[in-house]
Image (cartoon, rainbow, N blue to C red; front, side, top):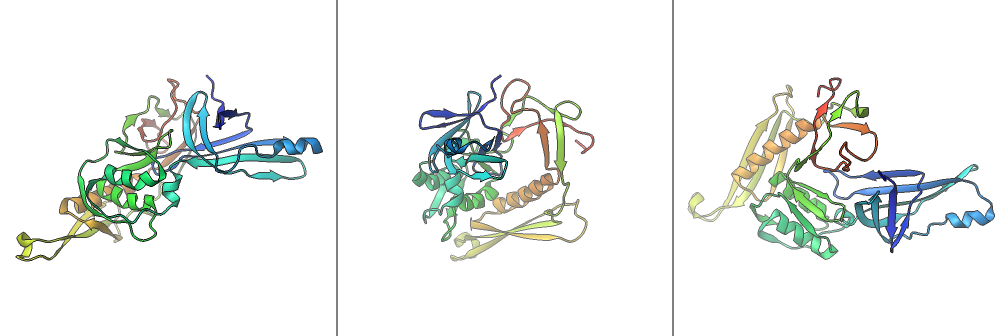
Amino acid sequence: MNDNVTLRVNGREWNGWTSVRIGAGIERLARDFSVEITRQWPGDEGITTLQPRIKNGSKVEVLIGDELVITGWVEATPVRYDSRSVSTGIAGRSLTADLIDCAAEPTQFNGRSLVQIAQALAAPFGIEVVNSGAPSGVIPDVQPDHGETVIEVINKILGQQQALAYDDPHGRLVIGGIGSTRAHTALVLGENILSCDTEKSIRERFSVYQVAGQRAGNDDDFGEATTTALRARTEDAFIARYRPMYIRQTGQATGAGCIARADFEARQRAARTDETTYVVQGWRQGNGTLWQPNQRVIVFDPVCGF
């Protein structure tokens, strides 16, 4: 099966790299890539042929074999050399990178869903939003703070809605739930696992999570318009010593929303204790499909307790 990595720019395809790195995940909004060619020092006539022919700011498609994996922009064309060799490279990120770097339009959103808010925030950048099982509930009030980036605004809502935001091979923003699909191939120690790296850290876990928010009151609350404070609390029984964490629920909070946020924060941080990086052979699973972000995968690794 063809697993060569190709860059397609302005209708022309480039490959033959000596080094390739492609990154994608559910906790990064933009896939990224870097490729490099390293050669022995050529003669004077050969040096100029190594100058980058792909320019910064060019739109790029990255393919593994015939399958598209990234649609984005070229952001760097590094050159490195020493007494023995010279290297030129190309690096870039998904179209969604602008949502990470750039400020959100100062617009107030009332009574819209998570996907609708994401669509409005992404629209000025020409980025399409895909609904992959996102919560459909209405969010009472969201307004970007001055200078907040698009992803900072979206992240505040994700915590309330227990959802994920990531990109797809076409450079679109995907909003969805956790583990939307299943991997075909299991990760098995002694078979396809080449190496493992895990910290098993509890540094980011706390004994109690307290979420506080507020909403505008009405006559049913206290007989006159007012502001109602809301609080929720969840404990992590694994953390024996006192380690409190306080979270402010932004916008118009609800009691159910505060409870869900506290539970989600506790579960997510507990899961990160078991966060593990496995190295496998190649880009593909046993059935020939590429490994993808947000897939549920079965792991057999008694060394790490899986």
